[in-house]
Each structure stands twice: as structure tokens, then as C-alpha cells.
Image (cartoon, rainbow, N blue to C red; front, side):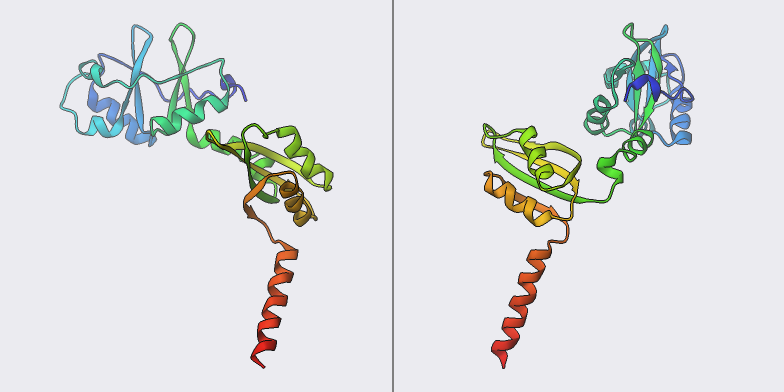
Length: 217
């Protein structure tokens, strides 16, 4: 999970004196959304490849007012990078030291490939989103409800926070999903979404369908 274990070094940061066209060609060759600029070894910022396409000839330094000031420290963790990928609409994030020296980069594909190995994403299981009052929220209780019904938690996270309520997404493995559903409601949680085959619900639908056919006769 530490950034330093996932740094790639084959995509260089350009000097502010380098030409715009050279940086643009490199970004296209790698398929990356941004190029990174340094000056005397110190990271200056990033600039999007699409912006370079529309820029006149010259040096990268001439575009300094358009540099996007984002980067991640080499002693951070992977979770910190996710917000940067989203906020700056990029597929590559520069990694710098505390002295702002360019150390390399993180590629979006590499990070997602790493997360895909986690049981939360790799294991098959039921996915459920529950909602509760913010004051009532307890991750310990959420896990206890699943485990008390012989379920096995693969992972859970808060996916929405408002002033009035919190939504929690959880993934678990259980042969008793309907009981977990009912236990959550008994403890005051609302089941907002569920992604699994609910045997009890299917049985009720079958019985209702049978009843409708009976009435048709």
C-alpha cells in the first residue's frame, strides 16, 4: 500500500527549457494524460497533453501559468492517489520527495490492478448497501450483524455521508443472505440496494405468480 513500492521511473519529467512538441510526442507515445515539468531538479507542475496539442511552439516554461499543481509524496499510500486521479482527470500522477524532487510516477492502470487483487474486489459474494442515521452508525455493529449470521466479510466502506444519514457498502459471503437482510432492518438499518439472489424473495414471487395463474382459471 506504500507509494514507494509502486513508483515507475520510465516516464521522465521534462525541464522547463524543453520544447512543447517533444513533451507532447512523449505523452502521446506513452498514452498518458499529462507531462511533468521540473526546473533545476525541482518539480514545477503538470500540464495536460490535450493542452499541449493546442499550444504554440515554444518551451514548456512559457506555459508555467497553466501548470496544474498536483503530486503525491513518496511516503504516502495508494489510497491518497485515488482522489488525484479523479480530481485532475488524469491517468498518471507524479511522485515527489519532501524536497519536491521528481521521483517517478504512478499509473492509474497499475493502481487499479493492485486493488483488483483485494478480496473486496476479487472474491465472489453478495454486495449490500445499507443506510442509517449518522449517530447510529457503527462499523463494528455492521460487521457483527453479518458475522452473527455466519457471514464472512470481504470488505466494507462508507460510500456516502450527508447531514442526515450514512450509507455503507459491504461485500460478504454467506448462504444466509435473507437473514442478514432482516437483521439489518431489525437493528434500524435500511437496505438501500442488494446485489445477490434472494431465495426468500424469489419464493414469494413464484408463489405470487402461481396465485395469479390460479385466479385466471
